[in-house]
Length: 116
Image 1 (cartoon, rainbow, N blue to C red):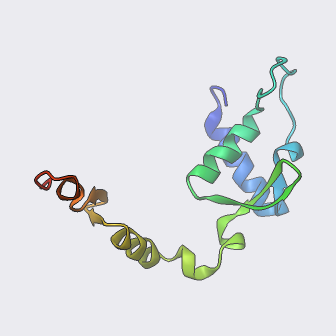
Image 2: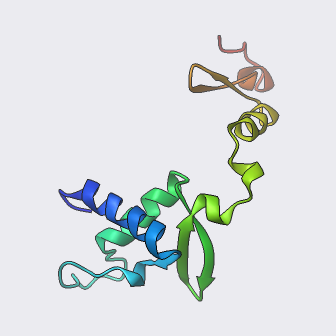
């Protein structure tokens, strides 16, 4: 994303907030293409970053192209509640302690003593 990555991250989120669902195509490339197939422009890298953090979601696809929107516009409210995350974590055998995820009994399942 370059040295001004924080600006790029902010511009991408604010653009989606103001304009609605956007794809990487909707953002301009600041410099000429370098010639590689996966030569992502900074905004595209920012979209993927926000997607991996759960701040945006893919609302639809147009062929291979992803269209991103704010997560709360795409997912139902029930899936955005922290209690849902905690319930899912518990169901998966993950215990949350002071913001850290700890796998419960993982070593027991593998025939070893559990981690404390």
